[in-house]
Amino acid sequence: MEAVGILCLAVVVLTWGFFWVWESSERMKSQEQADLLGGGSHTLLVIAHPDDEAMFFAPTVLGLARLRHRVFLLCFSAGNYYNQGEIRKRELLQSCDVLGIPPSSVMIIDNRDFPDDPRVQWNTEHVASILLQHIEVNSINLVVTFDAGGVSGHSNHVALYAAVRTLHSEGKLPKESHVLPPQPASLVPPALCVLLPVHENQLSALPLKPGSLF
Image 1 (tube, rainbow, N blue to C red):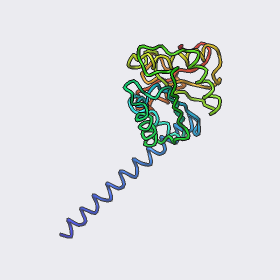
Image 2: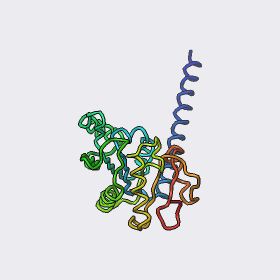
Image 3: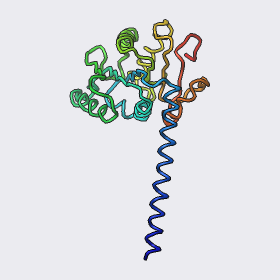
Image 4: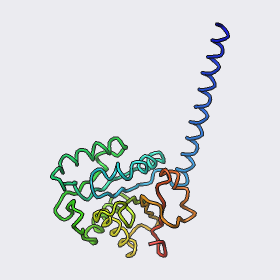
């Protein structure tokens, strides 16, 4: 019995040691990534409807939080396609709470200019104007939004990408800003490859600078 007790104790000690080493390694890895990306950066997640944040961007938000980024969320509609906008707005705030985004960092736009409707083309200039204002007010230096196809092809998703592209082409974005689409791009600038592990290999980064991939 004494031998069994010693064996059990040895197993417990070895198990604890393994997890301690693993946790230390993960902490060091996160710290290195945070140093490279600039811990404390302000990130803006731009979505079209409540539930986009969880359906398409949850790993991204959690990864950025580990890197000490302060995440803001800008949602361009209440998701009222089935007349459940008020319910979905509450659900969005609850989802953001789980993801670590406080209510004070969440902005939900709920007006007729941006209806939740795949048949309606949102005005690109109007979207870009609101987006730029939000970027400037919150000193944003990283923008996370949909890719050119809106992931699912939804026109409201595509409108957000179009607005970011417009701001970039007009040179209105902060010089050191970057955009992260939720699907891999064909090319990833070497200097930004470090971002890939942060987003569970779901994302690639495109520099918002003249001569970039846009």
